[in-house]
Image 1 (cartoon, rainbow, N blue to C red):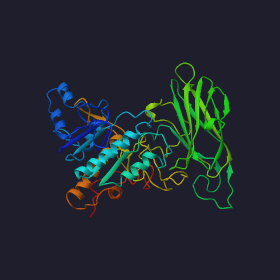
Image 2: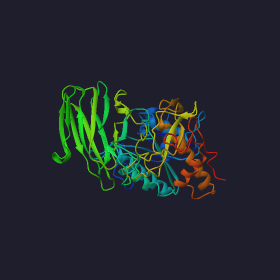
Image 3: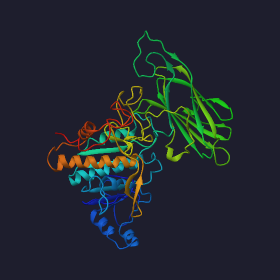
Image 4: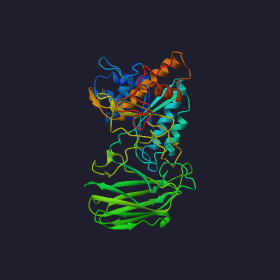
Length: 470
C-alpha cells in the first residue's frame, strides 16, 4: 500500500521502493529511471539490527515526518501491543521523491508510485490495495485533471482498489463558489427553456489575507463559454480591471506593495474548464499586503454563470487567510475527486458525527464543467479520523487526526474483503468498483446525517461486518 513514508511491517512480507534514494550499486526497478528497491529480506534484516546506525547502513531510507509510518501501521501494522486493520497483509511501501523541475508538484511522483505498485502486484500475481493519504487543492475539482483521469484508468488494471483521503479543507475557508445568474434554475446546471428569464449580476469575492503571508495564489475556475470582466481591489482601495488579451493572457501588475502575476488559461485537450490564476508576491520586504482583497466578476456573456475559487491548502497558509462567505461544499482535495477511487472522509468516533475538517464533496447538481456528472456523490464513505492511535517514528504510539488516518482504516478493510473474496475463493472478482459497492451498501448511519449519500460522509460510516455479501 503506497504511503508517504515508511511503515511498520505487517505479519507477511514487505517490500519498499524509495524514490528519494539513488545508488551506484543498485539500479532502479525495471522500467523506471530513478529510485532504489529494497526487498523483504533487506527490510527485515534492517529491522532486526541492534542499533539505529546499523539499521541505517542496511536500509538508508527514513520516514522523517511520521506520516507514512502512522498510515501503514493503521492499515496493516502488527506488534505485541498493537494491531492495525489487516494485520496479515503484505506491505508494499513507496516513498515519494521530489518533483522534477518541469513537473507539477508531486503529481508525476504519485503516478510513478501507482504504476510501480500495480506492476509489482501483477508481477507477484497478488491483488493490491493502494492507499493515498495525499491531496492538494490545485485544480477544478471536477475529475478532469491528468492525475484524476490517470487514477480512473489505473483503477481498472489488475485486481486493484485505490483509496484516497478527502483532505482536511472542509472548514478552512479556502473555497468560494456561486453564480452570476438569478432565475428559476440559476446555478443548478439545468438547461434553461426559452421561457425562463435569467438576470446576470456582478458578484464579489472577498478574501481576508492575514499578516505575514509571504506568497499566496488564487485559482478562479469557470466555464469557457462564460465571459466576465474581472476587477481586483487591494486592501488600500486601489482597483484595476484585468485585461484578458495582454501578452497571451499572461502579465504582471502592481497593487500597493504586492506584485500580482495573472494568467488566463485555456481549455485543455481533456478538460473544458478555464482557469484564471493569480500569484501574489511581495514587491518590497517579505510579505504581501494584508487585509481584505476583493475580486469582482461582472457579466459580459453568461451561459452558466458559475464560478469556483480555490486557495492553497490550509497547511501552507495562515488560518486567517480565507474567503468570507466561504463554501464548504466541494472542498475535497485532488485526487479524491477521481470517480473510480474510494474517496474517504472522516468522522469523530467519540460523537459518531462528521468531523468538520473533513473535505466535503459532491451530491452536487451545480457543477457545469468537467467530467464529473451532476449528482455524483463523493466521498464514498467516512471512517474514524480523530485521535487515531498509530505507531510513530519514535517507537511509541500517538494519536493522529485527519482524513490521512481515516483512509488506511478503509484500505485495510478493503484488504480484508479482498482476502475473503480472492484469497479464500469466495469471490475471485472482488476488486475495483465491486469493493466500493459492497462498502457503500454496508455503511452505517452516523449521527446528524439524515439523507444518504451526502457530501459529508457519502453513504455513511465504514462497517466491514455489514459489507460482506450474503
